[in-house]
Length: 247
Image (cartoon, rainbow, N blue to C red; front, top):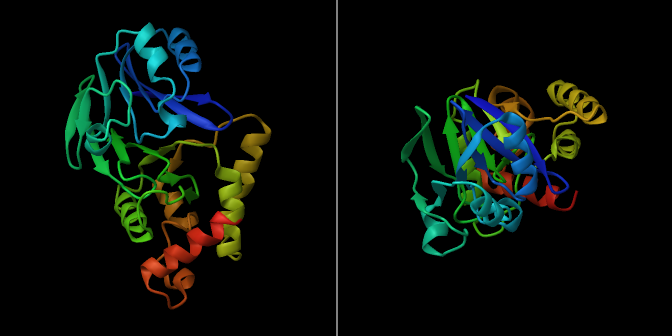
């Protein structure tokens, strides 16, 4: 399996998931960059996978359906029930698995950012949308703080070698915030230096890796006693998320 990041809009990522000359695209906010990417890669786009319904993740569906022979448009059962994803043909729920190019793709429901948020996990790759970012997490729009913290706790149980492909290039700012939460964490200092250098050279900061996230991402460490400081896990997560909202 090959994963090709496709920058879209100002800071979004779509991803081509390539198997045997066929590709799925995750969260295409725009059609044109995806069409350029599939032509460059010499692959046929046959599926669209959506992590949630926000416009900057689904905006390219219409153009791709018009230009490509799309066999499936996949999203959550919640978003399908509420007709929130254009052209959706497959409704997915927690624990379900489908096959793409001989590879199993597992579905995890991860509500909080939206009520219909899901993640796709395949061959050691996590497509987390706007729930888990490198060194950060998404805002809580439709769910509750408890719901979001539980979703992140669910994701952190994935294998340590899991590669994290997230929805936005927010890494440098996320690490700057993480440093305010844990100013004496040397792992954050190293990650920030590397991410800053990568962006200065025009390189992506994706993918991340779960083992590093567990050491640097305050939203996966919300119940660590050094961060919680006597607060219960939900109160700790709420405090960190509130601080990030105004950072």
